[in-house]
Length: 267
Image (cartoon, rainbow, N blue to C red; front, top):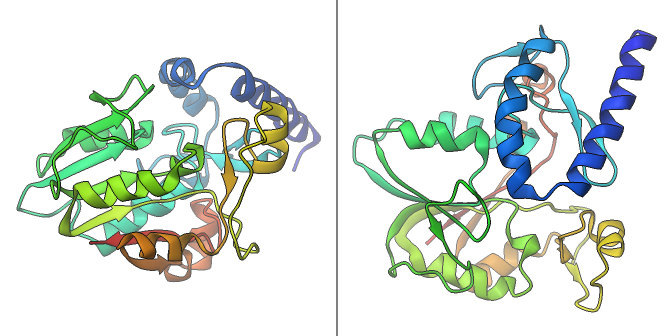
């Protein structure tokens, strides 16, 4: 890698870390809509590809609130490894994009890379919800949802539960509103080297939370027991290691995280 490009990456990492830890998330969402096409133009190339929109770039951007990961944030969709992995799973292993019977879908804290695409889908009845996101149709507390029992065919609730003090109650609400036979994708940041989840309610300082939990607004680090906790709520859980079903070449091309697990939950 040329020295000039190494310097660019170093500067970008400093800038992105400052922005992520300084600007509130709702404002970040609005700003990113403007910045995204500029980044996509500046970094276009053919080394890496975002499978969500099919666009290719000479490099992806760094990302992380604490320790920054290189080459993970797509300039065009702002997708991360987990978003691209989920997209591939939905595209290749489900009828989410092709079903002829309309599905009711509830999406918590909707990600930008999915939001407009899902909104345009004619085969889903799509509702978004969150307490703070400007993309939410319904402002709601995940621990007290204003939706009927057994109402949704598909739930997306990704990288939300690590922010919720009472994640048990949140999981119960997710289970309640999901239809029997329905599917819930409940991704979380997870340390697979850790057997049990760690949380400590006495840790309230943002810098300490960032140091211990990985982000200033996280309240726990999930371990491998996350899947069993979902099962204790009532879900049937498939621990989908989907990168094993993608060729090593495409894992590199799409900038995926080898070994990342998608929790596929059914009622």
